[in-house]
Amino acid sequence: MEIIERFLYTKEHEWVNIEDNIGTVGITEYAQSALGDITYVELPGVDKEVEQFEQLLSVESVKSASDIFSPISGRVIEVNEDLADDPSILNRYCYDKGWIVKIEMVDEDETSNLLTADEYRNYLASLDRNDTGDSVED
Image 1 (cartoon, rainbow, N blue to C red):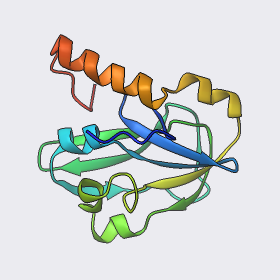
Image 2: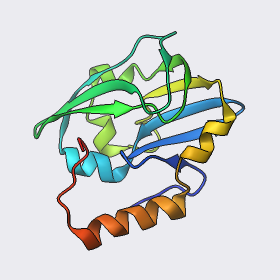
Image 3: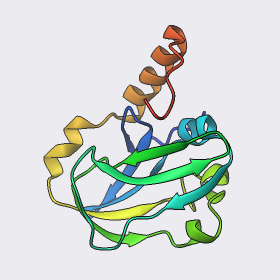
Image 4: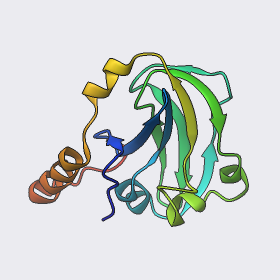
């Protein structure tokens, strides 16, 4: 399972890549795999204000509908319009072409609430060890 070293992660399987106070947000390979074939992405509006770990948007797949949460607080400054036409981009390219939104961060200290790549890798391993049946919706 691919995990990008420079990204930060949430236990709900979102990633954020922060550059110059702008966080590019998406879902992890684990999330897209658990969701199955993604059929619809409900993108938020540009200028939407979000709080860390607040619902950002929803995605629908052949298996279920799931909320995606914001890993950081701030203002949505850009959305990936390509996902409206082809939501399956999230399944094929979850870490590059499959980015979902860009958020202008308001609090850099919030990054301490996120997981590093190693921490996320260990978290996934603990899910496998526990075999709890946790899903992306949990």
